[in-house]
Image 1 (cartoon, one colour):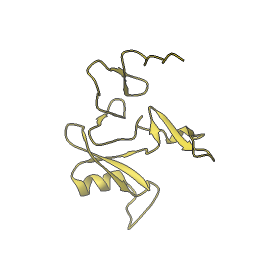
Image 2 (spheres, helix red, strand yellow):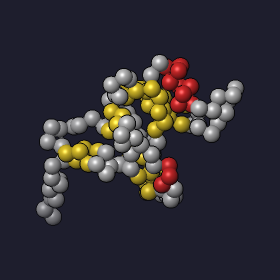
Image 3 (tube, rainbow, N blue to C red):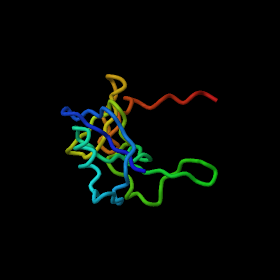
Image 4 (tube, rainbow, N blue to C red):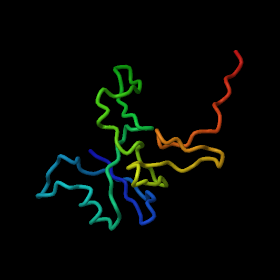
Length: 122
């Protein structure tokens, strides 16, 4: 199963849907981004469910999240969510800015706090 972000004219993600894998052909349809765009009337782009900050993750035998061996699955920097913005130049989904003081991270396409969290005293 694949996931697709439906994007309005302002490049704002308004919905994320489950859809067909891009290598799946059904009734002669193989370009699912175009298909979901046509059906919804919005731009539809594939989004990688296990991609966070430009890294694709999988799970080990203990259920722990670890970076995937196949980083070709990491695309568009972040799994899209409602309220995210799609940046065409970066080909990336960018989450909403949580606080005014947060700083945009060009590498991860996420918003970082202006300083690291303090370490608690032992």
